[in-house]
Length: 55
Image (cartoon, helix red, strand yellow):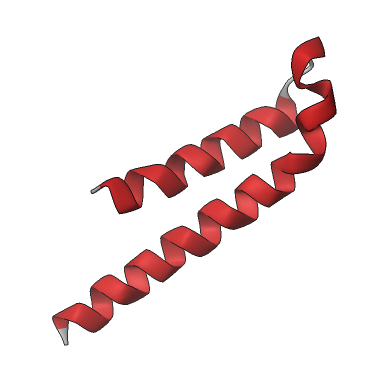
């Protein structure tokens, strides 16, 4: 379950960084795309592993 929740958290945090205007997160905006890509790739890999395990 943690393997699915953590990528979703990465995705949400990436979108949060992309949309926020808060002063403290201004220097971290360049990491937004990295978190989004990391979340998507981890989630897709987890679903592939779950599919392969059922076969």
